Length: 356
Image 1 (cartoon, rainbow, N blue to C red):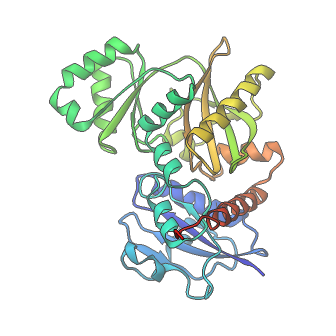
Image 2: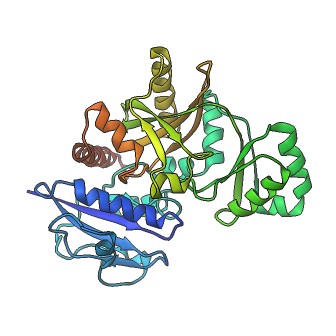
Image 3: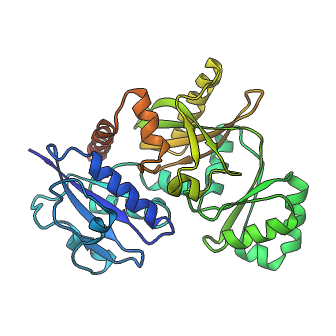
């Protein structure tokens, strides 16, 4: 009997377009002989819409947006397919950024007791907040670049103090990032104080918390992690953007980036990357999937940059490519993620909720 899969995508986020591309890619890879696929679309204004069961892969993003109905997000039951009388077996959240990747939707699905692919509430929220993530990495003993962070109110009250602090503790260039966003949205490189002020202004459009990271001359290396309690790592891949850094445009628009898979690395570096990727996975209590991003310097120093708890599945995405080169093609990767989601959900059902 086919499993009923709900694709949850779109979302009230600056990464809405990325989510749509991911959803389209998933429909082209999922096995319709094994699964019934039901689209659940969230507009960028936060309106929830349900669609009829997909009989085949969606041909365009526009097709995924042509869904029926509307209503309030707190009445999610009305958005689940009425044809699935026994409910959905698994939901695949494909919501990048806030209101989807940050633990909010995961919490809703937990309350509804529906199995879902990917990381839980804690891992999602901690992985989304780059500052919290960095602080946990410190606890785990993972090496990373120096950084400074502040919230909008602190910056508005004493901009001069923070400029002095950044110049005292970091060395140009620096990278300015919204703490709670992904896909390189709102990120800028700054080589001096004037550019830093402009970069902070840009980042504050997307978040109230900003993190400033020390720039480093290094190779950008990424590793896919897959599993629950016993995660496994893919081969490593190297990102070589033809721009100053791997920005949103390079990731999702122009493909103006070289991806080298597998990355040419010393065997000892590969081994250390695997150890550190699994350590990051476990310190955040991750499950399902993670892409761990590292810097590797010329003398093979390994610095963890961040983890992405919901890496993209677009044609330009590194995560599925890493696993394809490891021997797990995209359709089988989706099947593996669904299996991991069900396994984790079944384990949670063993927990006692009554005190006898």
